[in-house]
Image (tube, rainbow, N blue to C red; front, side, top):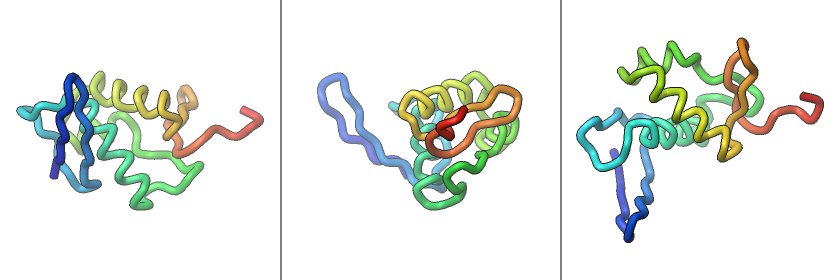
Length: 99
């Protein structure tokens, strides 16, 4: 389920952790995926410091392009929801202080 609130040039949304990507909706698929992943983290699907599914797995699970998954994950990195380790994966929360 997607809830949108429209303001001039701004869209606020809340996605369910069990939502599917709406390719015809007003919100881009990468933003939808980012919100779904945040909802899954809040729900406790992945604990802080633990990896989330791989890009390949997310591509298969949500039926979207790898570039869309990467853009969603990059958005979550910018928001400091997750962090990446090249060649190892994407992890929930902040990176350890020694990394």
